[in-house]
Length: 510
Image (tube, rainbow, N blue to C red; front, side, top):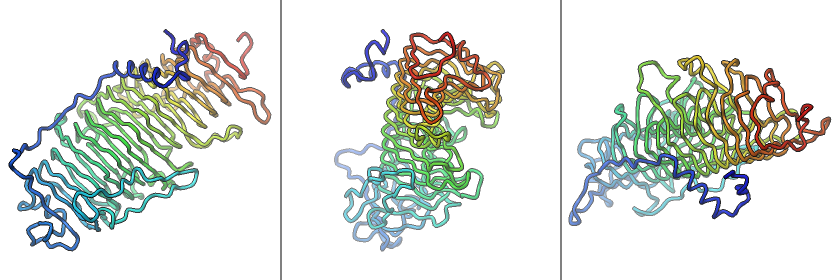
């Protein structure tokens, strides 16, 4: 049955949820990779230690006589043993924390151990075209790790550890906010990061520096089975949140970049996944309009651009759900030939196109590129975008077979486009002679579009079904333009089934 027959977009939420649930049931779900922590009997208390700025490292680490530094608790050989809880009182700590034992709970608090400091990811920020106003990293509310130099150092290092629980920490002025992972691709960590916030990360004069929260590192470090939630990430110069591994979950993540004057200072990847069966949900990313770097939003990619000889990474079964991207050059992205059978559902991408100017502003929607195939985008909304949907490739995947399509077998289902300068942009960045691929747009609605199809590469394999392509009018034109670009004539060779084109300047015979 056709989705449009069911009036998918307008039907009651309860019915839409049934359909969405059916679709998600077809997608591989998290395998629940879990590391078994230390188990204690009901008669054995959990070792508990305390850190405060007015403490002394010669103390026993009790509440009355706390240690002074966090590393005294989690790094020193005679600190808190594996399986301990370490409470850290609000204050400023100038250190690089390295956790040397497994099953440690590192918990920040305001005044009483166990109290709940503010969750900064939930703070009202309300960004507009100007820079947003962020909540302060107040050391009186929760512990603040301050490295003092954003070009060097690691705020919290969890490499080669298992079962670490980090809650209620602010981190700023390091090259890396928090990192984890192991060289073993099968290493299961089962970390929990909750209310860990980072700001001012990376050397803004270096070509590629600064990762806010990095669970793994593509092709070299792997993080599996961990969860990060309620994180605010501000001005990480290279990457906001990285998930390089399998079976991880990220929810309520907020990533912002306001330092856009140079490409080195602009965040490159906001949320990047290079693994399988990961889930990212309920998150929000924001890029300063007209930043020097265009900005990759919610991105799935493999290691095609890495040095030869590394492990094969084939990201599949990832789910991105209920996420928002604002002013991104690429809002929701699948990239490279190993990226397939992933799902993006109920997302929204915003741009700042005003609907009548000849400048389209900042903000694109869905991007399919570099051989990614068989991925689904369901009920994605794109509002005021420069380019709603982009299909192309780059020189980054040079190892791909020569006949590789830009993208293939991807489906965009029940998309809603409300005002866009270009509806579909087929780019010619690298292999312009290759076809865009046999991708399908189904049961979607394009409204108030200036240019419908811009074909800078062959597009004759594209398919469109049960979709409305609606144009717009403005100064000097009364309808939206149907097609343009070096391969404009091939748009007519694409397969259109039950599609309509209200207020579009169609060629004769259409």
